[in-house]
Image (cartoon, rainbow, N blue to C red; front, top):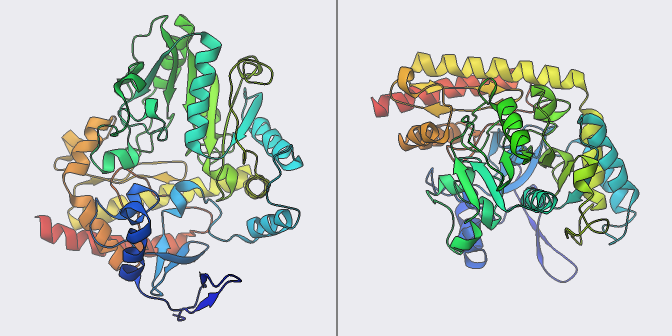
Length: 449
């Protein structure tokens, strides 16, 4: 591997370049801990649930990332789904370069935000309008506010293990990093913030009444591992909301434009009233969006009296990158990616079985999950958060993660995340992952048996 060197910026600030040398992973993590709480800007990155020192990324290309020590990993994190074409894809880089030459932010309407909004609406049946924001958390937070403003009601229903960002009202019963750290919610969130949030089991249809403003759900749960909706679950939610005049919100921050050309709602043929998007639509840059029926979005200022705003909303670089990704991802590519992910999941399952590890490897579209258990008849398939917690409590995921990392494969550093094979992960490369997974599973099996 090439060594790494450092250069100095115009003001003397240290700039790290790929191929330069400026300390190892431990040194960089120690340095980060001095100036960043816990050494990370998002808790799951800390390796708290898997142990060890997190690797610090120096660069990425396609399906690979390189850390500051020059180690190369096959990356199945892909920025937790924000990257679908692979790191530093030429089309995305070209779009960002072109946009940046014209300016990076204006605080005024731009052509790019209109084009991206048109592209989203064109791909998602029933989504008439969208408003762009800067993160998935902003999208879900704003969608809840719209639903409350439209209905004049306060109560929100969410599902245990579904993570909808870190807004106060939605942290109750959250999956992903909240579950990884074993938190029931978060300190600093007053009881009043979650007083109108009702948490119910995923894949179970709750009884609703006229106090409910909205039901928010991941149509395919991907923050408690990968848990698909049971047959009829989403349609039953749609019917239950209609019966009491509540709005149905699909959080498609992960599934939007990843599980199919039109996202989960188009794939599963159930239309919500509001959608939340993120990740793929920014091409790896910070972005979010919420959208829905024109009638519902009409409550937003300046038309209506529901206020929402953001200085960097519709950022030109993010919209350019997102448009580039959507321009590449046609229906044919989605079909190829899904077939490849299905083969990968089945091959991983076979490798686990051969090694004697009790595991389940579900997939939907290009999303691939990984659960460990004690008894396949009792533990699988995982249909709700309680079962996902049981899987995480075995402690096997952390052991498997370390074995894979040592073999040059970067999995998400927590048992509640999913793997994100993308366009850059061809079958030959995924075959290498399967081979290494077989070795890792055999090593883990020898330790836990």
